[in-house]
Length: 499
Ligand SMILES: Cc1cc2nc3c(=O)[nH]c(=O)nc-3n(C[C@H](O)[C@H](O)[C@H](O)COP(=O)(O)OP(=O)(O)OC[C@H]3O[C@@H](n4cnc5c(N)ncnc54)[C@H](O)[C@@H]3O)c2cc1C
Image (cartoon, rainbow, N blue to C red; front, side, top):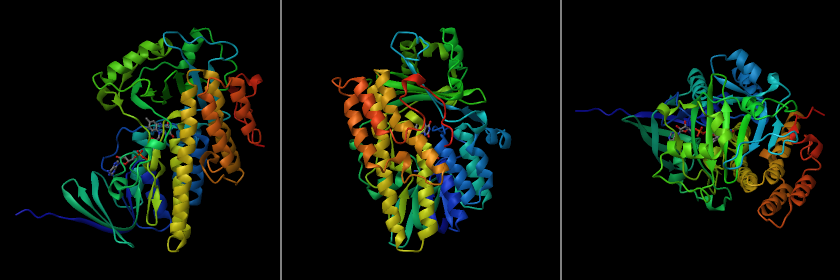
């Protein structure tokens, strides 16, 4: 006779998915006195992607650490303090964002006016710089903190049934072969794209409303050369670069796609091609490795950077996805919520995902803290849903306009201002104690309307680049703290000093 044991628990909040978002949600819920169980279908440490942080992400991390008394979290909000406090958890120095424009079959040719370059600083120097998160190690550390806080944390656990009985959820599944039975007042889906809750709840799929189309081929590598070395060999000087491109998230952009290059201090570099499948459809008969080699062959300067690169993640295999974009029509209900990446995802371009996740978390935890037992909680969750939807639409608009501009770099540079002007302004306002209502000021109707116009303009050959630039400059005249679009800066933007 076999005796089947049952793993049972009754908690306030059940969180599905122990990426950095789920683990932080569990730790914060615990700090406000809620009982929690955290589940993940996998086991830490595991390879994950989503590595590049931003000033906004770091400001939120720091505030969460202070407000919820998690002092060990604060050092992660800055490169210098991360290195000093956690030297064994790999990170990378991120001074800003760099974009380099390539044409097929041609070497990149630097010039003094930086025609094919855009560098936007996100820090003054290494001491206040952002970080690149080696997610396997960072996420595993957070999961250990969950366990240290005494929060039940079940790995290799999957939930197949979510039953809503009004005041209580009943979740059923298994941890390895053991059945699981969870009673919880609130469910958080922090599972990234897997969204088991969304599938069970039959949430409407609104991916068709998104304008961006992209897929990716990626891995971690060793042996990637610093871009700055190649830049100098190609005749570039770089003395007016606000930072070394190697100390940034580097974007190689070209008609129909782009590549991210994210170096870590331990010699590993994350890299991936993002491709518009309408232009470059996924062909399953070609291996990811062969496709990688094909794209390298198209762009000789990128090929030089990767000439000695060897993939080191997943046993040397590359990962490839279909279309990355997802959007669900509802991100929260009276007793459940999806974290931002479970509700929708657009593209790694401009590194918006982690900041968005942290802002969503901040909003959710504040709603729990202030209104857990009040009739206002469902109202707060409606607002959470509304803002997430606005933010996903706004990010989609920026990314889709950027892709449309990849063929003509001047046009891409113009529309990236929708990201950089709103991000820098949000950082400034947050530092001044006036955080905007939504990520990237996405709740401001003016910016949505202007973005829609810019998206049409960037796709319309009848609209000249100066006309597009004028539209963008007008839109951000009041909040353009970094002097974006000022021709005298030659697309080299230092981080603006606090006012
Ligand atoms: C190719 C790519 C590149 C990106 N690059 C960047 C970047 O540079 N910067 C940036 O800010 N953002 C980036 N992002 C976005 C970033 O990945 C997300 O913002 C971030 O991972 C969200 O964290 P999370 O914890 O919510 O979800 P995830 O990190 O996706 O974690 C989800 C967790 O849920 C678990 N899980 C999944 N299904 C189940 C299930 N059924 N049951 C239980 N557990 C489950 C998984 O095992 C995982 O541990 C990128 C995304 C992609 C796709």
